[in-house]
Length: 92
Image 1: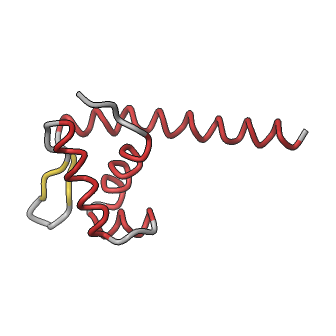
Image 2: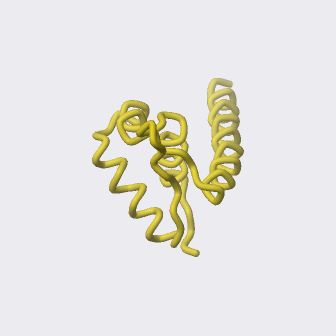
């Protein structure tokens, strides 16, 4: 499996939280087509599907993606803590 970087995880989290490409685009301040292309590229690199479209039109994470989301949220929290710590040190 190729390495995953934070930008990949941000896109995955945004789609999961936004329920689709449009919602993710609003969260990331990018066009939904950019989100769709990025998710497809990530899926291709990982060799598994991240989201399935439900009857209501929303994108729902696959089982594999649920695991990615769970770990991505940990990374997100750590990055947030790191940013806060560094800002605090810089202010001193």
